Length: 135
Image (cartoon, rainbow, N blue to C red; front, side, top):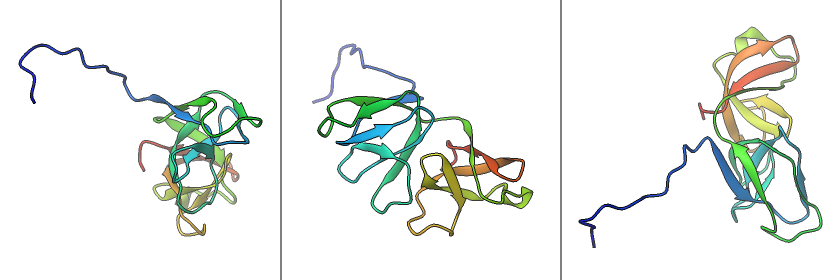
């Protein structure tokens, strides 16, 4: 039933969200973070049935815990610098996919193509700036 009185709806800007961490998992600060199909945070990787959610704001060490024993804060917006093999200016504008928790790959070069954003800049021949809002 709809309300006819004032309600105080909880709010957050959505830039930083918390997710429960998968069992026996350690996620370093600054790492790409994905959710498993069961909804637990893991390190970014080229893995099937996972969804990219952002970049770890902090370290979360659930090495000795079970699913969801701890949470991790993840930044969901922004432009981040990650490793990209043989980075070139022609990569600007293409999708970036999770390869490892600290490295992205060009779209179509990974098995599972877990998109984590768009490449918006190149830093030398080994790094790319990735806008994670553009996924």
